[in-house]
Image (cartoon, rainbow, N blue to C red; front, side):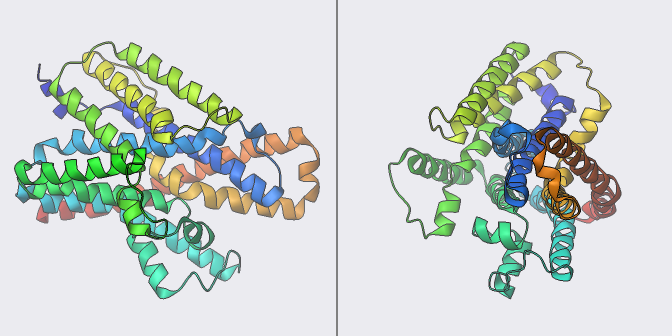
Amino acid sequence: MHNSSTSTKRLNLIQVYRGVAAVLVLLAHGDLIFNQNLNQDFLFKIFTFGGSGVDFFFVLSGFILFYVHKSDIGHRSKLKSFLFKRFIRIYPIYWVVLTLKLSASLFFSYDLDANQRNVFEIIKAFLLFPQDREILSSSFLGVSWTLSFEIFFYLIFSLLIAWKPKISVPIIIAWLIGTLGHFIGIFKIPENSLLLNFIFDQHNLDFALGFLAAYLLSKYKIGYGMTFISIGAFLYTLSAINYYYAITKISPVIAFGIPSTLLVIGAVSLELSRKVNVSSPLIYIGNASYSIYLMHGFVINNITKFVFKIYPNLTENLFILNIFGLIVAVIALMFGCAVYSFIEKPLVLAMKPKLATT
């Protein structure tokens, strides 16, 4: 049965999920930065599985893209508007944050690697062209590798808008088969081929899972929302425990991408069937998730370095260290929210009127 209500309803639980994904990544990077700067664990390494927030983000992105733009498929006249909407969603605030990061490292002379920051690499970083992740972490914005995948998926989706399905769908299916083939090891891509590894990277399957969830929800009336959420949360927790204890190595797409997909299907089917009351602070954190995602590493890195410089005994007391860790995480979250309210949101609103001319 076709479910037409998906075209209009605002999904608050999806926004909350975006906030959860951003906070998970923030907590995982807290551990990474604590180890780098203080040679100590952050909150007893409980949140090292938080990198799975990236898989959650990708599933959510695939879902949102199809959910919001499914009516654009096959309508070439919508292409310019689609690309402009996606552009203002990603680039303006990213450019602001990247410029701040480069300026700070230049003026305060830290993290400076002149070899890696040549003009070509700087242009690639600003365009979000796929780059070596080590170069991004040491010289630019560590999380931006994930944004390159976002841009790539927007371009893939734009094929569905630009061309008729009989042309675009076979191309996308061929790409997905290639990605699956690479994922399960049917064929190997040389490690030094950065671009081919990027095009057929397993993270693209997260987007495809989100896309599939949105397609199913738009075509059929799916019930049992709480059941889907419960199973998804249970599997996600199992994978987090497995990750923490390193019991067995499972691909993040299977360990976290599939549970994320179940969480999305459950949340949407629940919201489409009845009103779900969601607290506005949680929705706000979801709205601010992109700014939180971009800014948290910069904030945690600089606060830990600064405090350790003036208080070297910080690492001697585990209790104080973990209280400090929690405070830093909250500050990073609040800083991201402030960047959203005072920079990202005004930037997007300023550019939106231009949509009328696209």
